[in-house]
Image 1 (cartoon, rainbow, N blue to C red):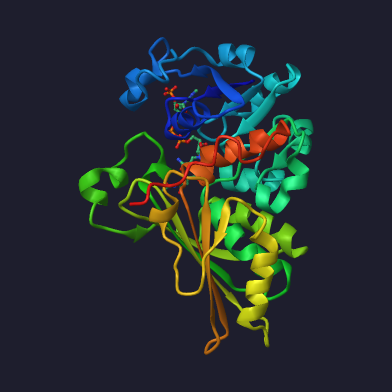
Image 2: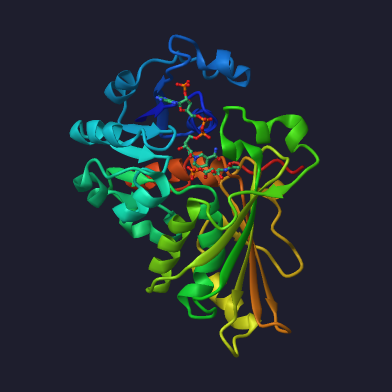
Length: 344
Ligand SMILES: NC(=O)C1=CN([C@@H]2O[C@H](COP(=O)(O)OP(=O)(O)OC[C@H]3O[C@@H](n4cnc5c(N)ncnc54)[C@H](OP(=O)(O)O)[C@@H]3O)[C@@H](O)[C@H]2O)C=CC1
Ligand SMILES: CC(=O)N[C@@H](CCC(=O)OP(=O)(O)O)C(=O)O
């Protein structure tokens, strides 16, 4: 069994990791840590886990000591020293935050205000969106798990971009997120009376996921691309709906689009291309590692529209992190992740 440890287990992403690891056939939860809840059982923090996940929260050092793989589910900026410690001790390190996601230090400084403390570790790290960069992940020791929007949007656009079916200029991602995306710490805009029955955009065209998506899409396109990104907060717990727009390359047909997406995704267990007339819906991927995608061509305006839906906590965080653990340890990629979403 792979011994898996979770640092920051009391946060939403950490708790979701513990839930998924408790059902994994080839991994076991070996240790969990928390600063605020050290010495308390995880099931005291999350009563839903009682009787199954009663592990007591210890320290970060204890997690590293007892684990073969360490998942960091910490706020941005806290993972670099932990990664160095894990690497020195021969552990696999999977970061759910953004400390290793951006390849360019200048981008990291601009969007997160930090520096690369260990450039050698950044050089070893892999940006791990399996459906796009799988071969680079196998056997790696430092894994940067993508964020939620940054999973949904590249999966929606990649096959069209890679095959030159859309133009590299003028792509737009209009996304909606459930409120668990903001983490467990309460804030004014996630307070129930202010969130419920409303919906608004935030960080319009200045969200820190923009360079991360541009990085992935540039790799796919083989040339630098830019993207306009507008996130919205939706009054539901889970889910990302990404409605992505791009200019069609002149003359491209829906048949060519469909072929490119089927070629890319028919062999992907977690990506479900929806048949004509069905739309991606966050309800249908809830609590699962699936990404549903629906495709449209507006031939009247020459616009391509790809709509993807994921659960931000699973394919957008903990599920994808476990998919990456499976790849890093070269076991079945879907292990522990095959549960269907609830039907309603
Ligand atoms: N929520 C989501 O949908 C997604 C989240 N992510 C990323 O995952 C990471 C965790 O996010 P999320 O779970 O939502 O956040 P939460 O705010 O829910 O949890 C953060 C965790 O970090 C711990 N923590 C906070 N400050 C410190 C500190 N100074 N030292 C050590 N531990 C600390 C908290 O634990 P305690 O106080 O108990 O110590 C808590 O367990 C973030 O980097 C986030 O960006 C990525 C994709 C999606
Ligand atoms: C609703 C909400 O607030 N969502 C978060 C994104 C969550 C996520 O993907 O986390 P990373 O920051 O690790 O990329 C945000 O917009 O900042």
